[in-house]
Image 1 (tube, helix red, strand yellow):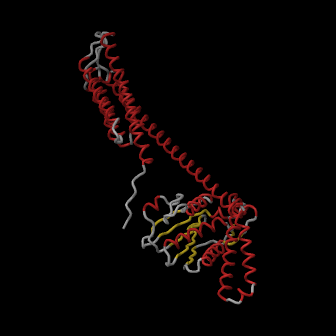
Image 2 (cartoon, one colour):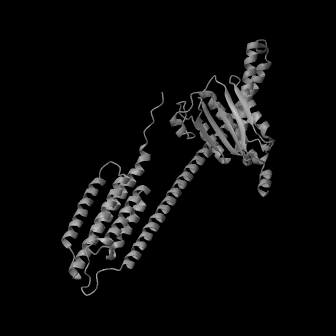
Image 3 (cartoon, helix red, strand yellow):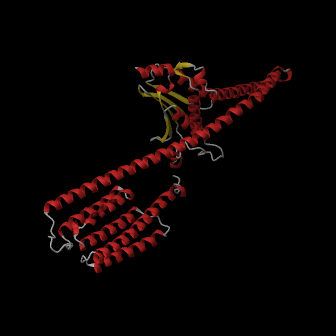
Length: 444
């Protein structure tokens, strides 16, 4: 049975809801300014300049705009998020009222005809491309219609009121150019800003993860130092027990002591590996090995530590290269194999090493278990996202993802078509080469 997807967290939905409501409030404020500006313009032109205007119809249109703005103000107080459709309808109402006012006051010959550009600019900032197109079409349609149908604006009784066709054509061309350039560039600027914000958020996330890793590294290094003394003491005690006649005469006790000594040696090797990784042994005393030998050692070491598990190794198109035996990479692959063995106990595992091209190495761990559910795939590599349901677990994959990222690669998980899971570690071969060789390759 597939798990029911978890609902989106409030944190993920809240910013979008806040943005929609804030955009609606911006439109409300802009509309109040438009109402005030249109009212002042009508009064000045009609009363101050003595130009005859159909002020009753124009005030009626202003009343419609006021009523709609009051409705928008009430809508902004509701808990439901403001959708793109609602913002688009609000802008279309603004365009419609503006078209009506221009129709009553000279049409395309009115100098306020370019207020259409303000509507297009606002729509370019607030709306997605499909809804933006609707506002652009309405503004262009209103402009074209006003060129043919409008009430003349009598500015001077002795001057002709008709504009020449050439002037109107140039006016339309200028308007279309302004609309097109304005919408295209504002949309591109918004896209660049969103991309920048996404990159900043990703950088902040990586910085937080690096701080988290640094703290765990310091904790692991300190624990390794502290464990050195008790492990050495246990090793000495077990060595003394092995030479005592009482224990030597009991085969079962002797075997148990030998097993404990092997486990102590393994613990000491793990502690030594932690200290070597903390000391950046890669840069101080790198150990060179062949790529094929490195993969073979990985599989052999894991089989020795997990004799009850079955691991098949497949290598495809591995070049004959000398690489650095990176202890961090060994731990990553070992952790992936450990997770696969825990997820699919009793089933065979496969480690597939391949070079699909001359610059990339892929290490794939395949199992025949139940696979990943959607939630695990979505949060793959996040800290404390363990399927074991135990507090403090789930750091292994988190560290593996960050080690892969440090080496310039990536770690991906997916479910296999025939059942089971596959985790793929993709690395650039250049990150495993000795530094001198890598610099020589770059010069070539």
